Image (cartoon, rainbow, N blue to C red; front, side):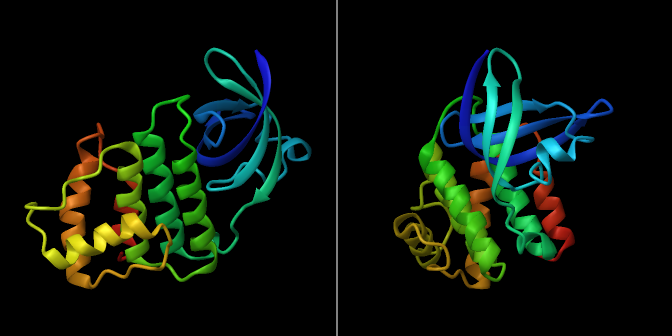
Length: 212
């Protein structure tokens, strides 16, 4: 085991036994890693309110084969505004689930980390937007090398142009998809994502319940 620090975003939490938690993180320095936080369910002094979905943390941990061991955490932001609105929770869950499901463990991707962090920061201060969710999805696919072809794929030139702009601008809120373009974008993006998944995204079911 070796000691390490990491800037990390929590992707998923799972209770383990009576006191521990298994945490999936996406980190700037080490990519996606899974770690065990011993006593996290009982030790408020050790972890405080840090171990929450979507939280942005500085971690101290021991790395080795198998699960890392989380020794302590410092909160950078818990994005409190996200937690107050169901649509924002759904969008954040979608982004985090995509990152967890589509990235290999232990392979760093600073560009993807920055994209996820920018999206959470934007969600925390801007109204929830269906356009921004598609913006995140197409840029994630581009970073991972899964970018779909835009020509001859059954979408209009206008929608293709919006997707192209979304991949060029790098700024949330800069591209707005009309209702028809949202559906066309989904007809391209959803299959491009689903082909790399073994099962459907839980977050999409949640979003459909909230009316997104």
